[in-house]
Amino acid sequence: MSVRSLYGRIVRTYFAWAGTLLPLAVFVFVPLGLIHTIPVHTEVTDLNLGSGAEIAGAMLAVLLLATTGLLGEIFYTGAVAIALTHPHDGEPPSLREVARTINYGTLIVVDLIFGVLVALGTIAFVVPGMVLFVYLGLAAPVVEIEHHGVRAALARSVRLVRGRFWLVLAILLPIEVISDVATNLAIALTHDLLGDSLASEWLTDTATNILLTPFYAVAAVLLAINLIAEKDGTEPRLHSAPPGR
Image (tube, rainbow, N blue to C red; front, side):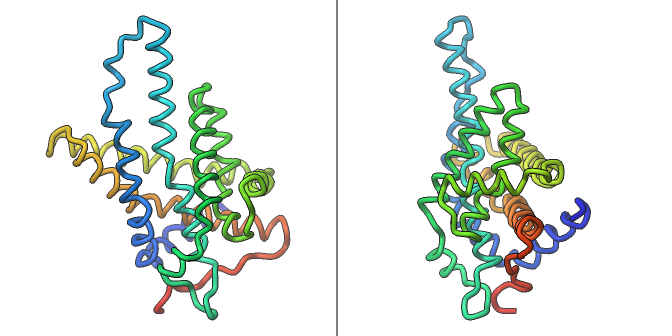
């Protein structure tokens, strides 16, 4: 499990499964794009930080921005785990079967907990947020691969990452940072071309999430599969080809 070989597998899996990954991303991020965009569109930089109440308000705005920016990634990663690992008559499941199989309640709660904890940790001098991002980053795949509940999935993610922190960090964090930078650049370009409107920001945020988040999701699923095999000696089955091939 070298970093280089894992990145190669991530890229190959993304392009081989794009016909499944991108429609799944549309399903998740078209509605969530508006939730992501509203805090970005709100101008928090104009606040006068002369009072304690306004400082608290600014901190709350930053927390909201960080939390909503992460929403959907974990849920989507769980859906990708189903697409890549769950069999249906020996074949990969179709998009409709993935939608029927998703453990909606558990993944939504895990997504919210992950977003809030990482955002709080990021506000608390960045490093705690990064640590939580890494240790909890495999919770969604194990929800769908091993059928865990919320607490068990979070604990299982910590156990899988323990001893492999730097490997998981080297895979997940650069993908997340590059995606965030690309999204911000795309939104800035949209401002220049189309003006500062909620609709244009929604379109841009949604499009970048659809194109870029699959890299993160595939990375988390591949890491989970490899670390489960490493810890338990049994590797979950990964489909060799998408449906229809």
